[in-house]
Amino acid sequence: MTDLAIARATPLRPIAAIAAKLGIPADLLEPYGHHKAKLPLSLISEQPQGKLILVSAINPTPAGEGKTTMSVGLTEGLNRIGRRTTAVLREPSLGPVFGMKGGATGGGHAQVVPMEDINLHFTGDFNAVEKAHNLLAALIDNSLQNKKNTLGLDARTVRWKRCMDMNDRALRRLIVGLGGATGGVPRETGFDITAASEVMAILCLATGPHDLKRRLGNIFVGLRHDRSPVYARDLKAPGAMAVLLKDALKPNLVQTLEGNPAILHAGPFGNIAQGTNSLLATRMSLSLSDYVVTEAGFGFDLGGEKFLDLKCGYGGLSPQAVVIVATVRALKHHGGTAPAGLKTSDADAVRRGLPNLEKHLESVQLYGRRPIVAINRFFTDSAEELAVILDRCRELGLPSAVADVWGHGGAGAEALAHLVAAEADVPKPAHPPLYDWAAPVEEKIATIAQRIYGAADVELQPKAQADLRLIERLGLAGLPICMAKTQKSLSDNADLIGRPTGFTVQVREIEIAAGAGFLIPICGEMLRMPGLPEVPAAESIDLDENGEVVGLF
Image (cartoon, rainbow, N blue to C red; front, side, top):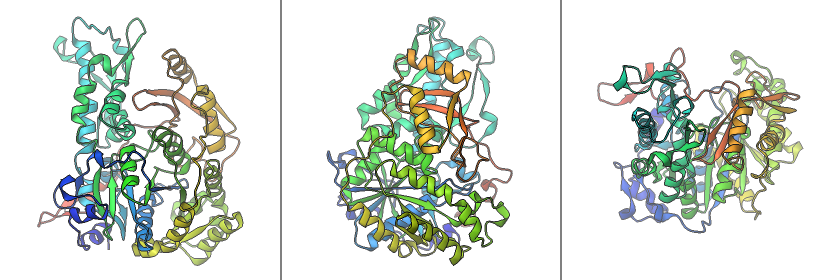
């Protein structure tokens, strides 16, 4: 059965019944139909008592390694063994849904539902982010058009683009303002996908309406002709932007296939932004549950590091357990197996790929946490291949378990759940940060590259050096770092699989995300606006004669 067929075959409970599991009275819900609801921020405790569990992964294949599926399955497993647990996850972006990767609600018997609604528009949070982002873009161009141009903004320095929630490579670079004197000021710009918007990153780090407006006001727009900075607050934009985000600020309650609560909220990209759900959703889940399972986008080198150094740094959080998801197919990929051979049993290839897993496990331990390895089982995996991973984890003295959550849901994760609960129940101090935010920018970048990626060195290219000078002049050098690089490799080169060594990370430029509160070193050709594949998933998505969605996966 397809993911959609499995989701439809499972009767859903009324959303009020799911809320009751968390002790939330029905009159506090803002229902969106029968199976979705917005939750008020008043549900967040000052001192949340739940135990946070982070799920990350090794460097994935293009199809991903099933972090969301494993997060949902682990949530089901923990509830099955008597631990009151909530999943707190990101919302899907329409780009991957209609592109190549598909939706982001998990898979098989480990899904959050209603699957179609969550993957398609949901409660409108992405639309709100898009509108708020584009309102600022319109105000910028309106300021340039104004004959007085009271801000003195230099159109050549404007960094703010527009955004939309769809993969469309034709929009990456554009000229706007054509059409004569009434058409605006001609300048070069472009579009980002909504998940890559700084507004999305801000939504995920804001602690409430006041902090949201403060962060929106701190968005760096560009420079005046006298080279002084212009921020969104100078355009009087934050109030109206916050109005558009008023409802989007509230987390969304849905359910898993086994009727357990799941809170989904926002969705920044993992290789451009912080790649995790909102701070508000996480704190709310910790206020309502004994255990909370969350995930961080892509491998631990991107999502895990950003979660621990950015989100936890701003939110005062610290996970009590860290799970690293590995798959036989990804380890064979890192062992040099071509895509055509990933379904063929090859224990030696798995063994050759183990160094990639080992590096991520070492990185987790830099934060004072003992990682647990979750092997996401596929039906093509052989017992010999699985034994290679389990044996290596045993040699390293680290707990591990095979979990067949796609095929069996929570029942397939009970062994893993026992390991995770045992680890989470051991009291731990807050994890140490990888670097001091007050350190020089180059030192912070080098620390991440060398300690997490295994790089030998870092080189700032001329554009990045110029950006660094501007950052220092604006007094923003004390912000933390949000690295932007390929998710396919520990390095900044997607072709370097396994555990590369001796490489130099090339930083092409450094973007300023002063509203979100971090700096973004761009390594390689990172795209904020992806394109569609040759055969996009959109070609298979349709409505049948009964008006039901088909082809969604």
